[in-house]
Image 1: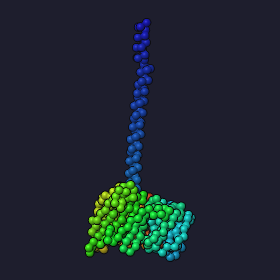
Image 2 (image 1 turned 90 degrees about the vertical axis):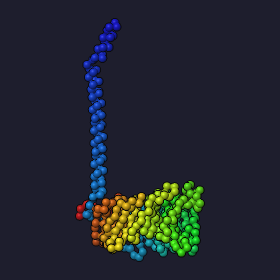
Image 3 (image 1 turned 60 degrees about the horizontal axis):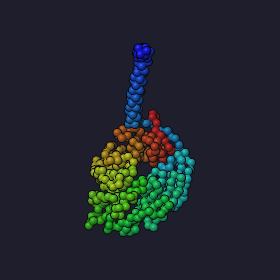
Image 4 (image 1 turned 180 degrees about the horizontal axis):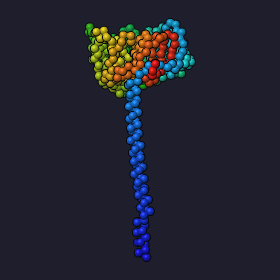
Length: 404
């Protein structure tokens, strides 16, 4: 009996059918692994090709003309300005502001009386102030939200993405920097004097409303002295005197005429022959001082780039572009007909009365065009190929196209 059981076990082990099944199963596993490996390799190759194609298109596309996606006839009289906002554009003047879709449909409007309008936009909020007056009007994408009334004349405003508004107010020998909530109530107040920190020349609030940077000019003996001071109104600043978390007084008598948060954590100070780049997490850190030769005629910036336009000693004009860390990424010659500048996502836009040119960040011209109706303004929209073109006759949403 034992011999029979042993025979059967031996037979099962050496059954040709079982051996073939095991061999086939192992072969199928190997084949499956080879197929999966092949699919992964193919996917990596396709992805690499796609990235290469995108880069080639991005840096070498040449657009010859444009398509009009939407057009609205204009008949403006007197002081009228336009700014991109809320998925369309805002027309504002001394009498009021209105938001329009790109096809000209009025979304909302609000009347007011302002002698000298100044506008600041941060994501979904827009503030319009009466410079040297005492009124600030706050708007979101749905329309009017609040009016802030100040006790002193307004010199400058800056709005955050939450609708918080900071304002520099002047009162003779003293100045105040106030922050206001969306309901118009005052959140905090900073007082400065000529004999103390100095006169605030420029200020900017971060997108989240928690950080503030101010450039001051004071008198030290018979010389002017400039400083850049950082404030924090979150938990970090609670333990600091007057909520000051950092300051730089290395500018001497060189005036810092403009400070700006270009993104949540990067602030830039524009001074005479110097541009300072700061990284602010909780406390500010100076990334670099870019010493600039020749006097800067214009500055322009986006969340990624900072640019300056200047004239050299031989009369030629140039534009330099820096990334958010202060590294120069482009230096371009500028023809005399170009006087206005802006950034697309990855390009430098320049235009004058009739001509427009778009460079990529390698310095290649990807679009150059002469507009028959002239140019009042060109506002970059999404990506690198969509713009809001403002002429004397119309407001048009356009997109670049290849060919003539």
